Image 1 (spheres, rainbow, N blue to C red):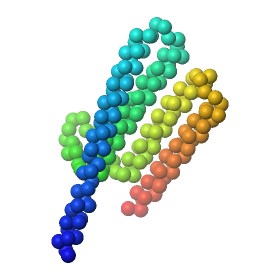
Image 2: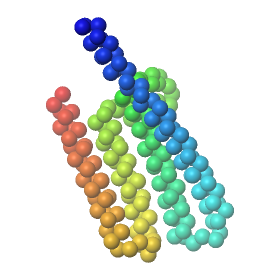
Image 3: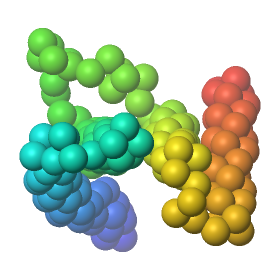
Image 4: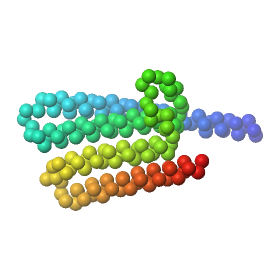
Length: 167
């Protein structure tokens, strides 16, 4: 019976490797965002003389949005893999990200929530720059969703802090 428990424990522990293809899929999505960013940047350079200031600003916000989503993807891929699958053993690497040293499941949730707020902020700013593109109820819902994300992030951070002080 002891041997069966050990085998079961090994199967359960090794099941974490089933997440590896998910992280590889997110890396493929990141490549798509690099393509989208490049195409948008080329479009902006080609049309720069025919766009007004607001249109340029909106295109720049779109580029920033893509970068922020790419940053979120990197954080999830690296942080998630390191936290839930296996160590990356990159502590000695010259480009080792500092945030990875303090990464655990709780801090990853807080960083994820803050990233979502940043992305939501870009969308909200885009809406406020050109509000004629939206109906009033659409703007209201964007604000409500943004405030919900802010409240959720504060709650997650507070919960994470409480759980950290109980260790």
